[in-house]
Length: 382
Image 1 (cartoon, rainbow, N blue to C red):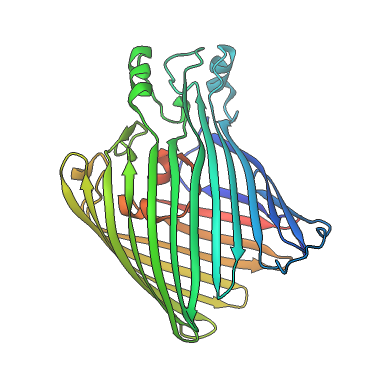
Image 2: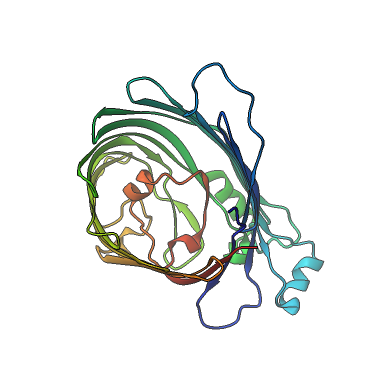
């Protein structure tokens, strides 16, 4: 049964805010297959799926061929909870907002002898209007765009339980906030100087892996990665001021194991080591080891993860960040009627190597992304 999930998230912090960021998102996703097409519409946090008619028959057996097309738009704007606090800004023509437009196209084609080829690209545009809070009535903007971020890969099933993969991808992460949520309070001359020097974070990564499944429920993966981070984007500790922490060439590897102990319990462990050769001539290592446990029983689903990492490099304020343990977790319960209630504990990772290895789509980076928090969420069908 197709449902429309509606997600409501509440950040559990004390106090009542007079003004806050409010996100509106909408988009459309196509999944093209030879017999069935799935269309996904997104409005805010709601998702609607609609099955379309069959495509015209093809002469070749192409049932494994899948193409995904995603067009997504998000907008962060100022809510109006406190009229006295906001009206002076709106009367002055000050309407801060941050917009994201993302296009993603990915095509996967299975070939003979267990070979699958993937190719695609992403295009992104980020625009922050009235990003300087002290320039009331101005239209100063921070913009970032790139229409072609390619990605290509190949996966091979070399033997029963053994697979190989090789992939290359580019991505971009740009600053995505306005002065109201900062604030970015500065003179117009200082703001324009920052616009000239602030750069989006860019990744170019080549990664390879070999996976082995020696027994049902047990898997081992060994990976290697090489590439470059340019203009690592970070923030002043405890603040909203963006900065570029530098660029580096990254090379390293990882080992991961996952084991399903039973239908209810599973655990996994991952170790990653990366060497960074920075453009200023400094070389350093980033290491991280994480252990995760998961449990599922009936309507309950829980996860707990602990990670021990080294000092983050390219973070802008390295001296204030010592090696520490991060703890993340989630508990989810499904009520009758397919209503999901979840409680999440987040503790973001600031390692440059972790950002380099993630497969998140291109998009904005916000100061709130580096904050620890407790999140309550509800998803319900309509």
